Image (cartoon, rainbow, N blue to C red; front, side):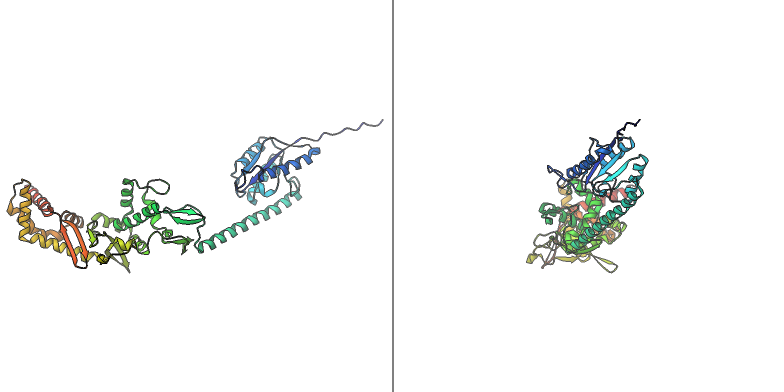
Length: 443
């Protein structure tokens, strides 16, 4: 008798199709790259129907994710389903859709082998169940990784060449600029804030003090956040504000316009060359800017403290804001920069001369009596006489306090230096000195 033939039904293989695209460009199109990959894979699975292959309904699509990492949501779900025993075959259009890294792919192959899962590439016909398939896979994957590294090197070289030409190559847009047509253009409102920060840092010499002032004034950065000390240091060290492009520590002339002048940059960085401890001590004792906020040119332009380093020495000046902001200087604004020691010396000398004048004692007595206060004229005269003796013994902070108490405005111009005093400056000083004397006597 002849034995009847039996048609063997092939084992059903559940096929998961994985697709990936590095960029998000074109994903919103009606027919995109992910769909094209899926159709090719589905057609391949149908061609293997006689082998029992059937595509599962779940989709594993990673749109906008690089093949250089395994941190992809659809891939993670695919691996979870493999470990749950829901998949027998993984089908991809090309092996680099799954990974471009040889080391990462080796990890994936271990997971496939551990769960008896076959890997198939539609355009590179092989599977990982054979030694020849593994060899072919490793060769192809090595070339895929090589291609990725070459592309990376090309991108880095292009980036470096573009930066050397001063071009904007993307990234976080610095405060003071906007990006139009892939170029930096000045945002005038933000640029004014940037200049103000540079100028006030020169005047204050302290990022901490400046940050507290800006927070109190509710000044915000480009992202709408409060400005802190760290932001100030990043801003005043960013050479983009000089119109430069920086690549790996080297500056090149940029295509964009500068926001600040070289003089203002130099003034800021002369201060930064000092150690934070030295700057902190100077800000605490106030000795570096005795006339800050009180000195003006004859044209009415404010003069601010600035610093210049020559060798190991630091020289202090009062500089017109017209010069710092690179504005046209009126003829009557000369001089635009003066030695701080010279100006302060003139102001102190004038103050000490007036305090010794007999008519000033009479004016102080009259001012105090006008307030209805009984005065000891002898004590007032003695206090004024002692002023010159004790001036040099005072701490710098106390000297600064007395100058601000007495001096209202200092004006410099071609005719010289004029010192205007507060009407009741000496009266307040004498009141403080006589009160201190009375307390010392009581003790």
